[in-house]
Length: 87
Image 1 (cartoon, rainbow, N blue to C red):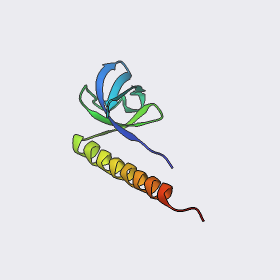
Image 2: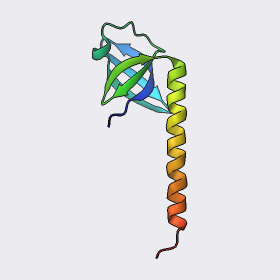
Image 3: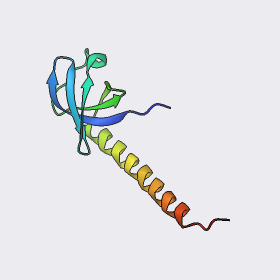
Image 4: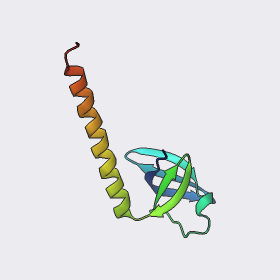
């Protein structure tokens, strides 16, 4: 399974960009999007250090809402597992 994380571009230097999301910043390669018009403020999907697709701000927001729901579900499961009596 592959996972790509939406991040917003904050700086560009050639084919390298600084991107951020949820308080985390990463340097990523824009090499795979070299034929795509990309600028500061754009949202991209990041996979293993590469921007693989430009997306809209709405798509980024929807993705983060889903990730937040999944993480909240994991926290609920962890709490309920820790409260279960040992058999």
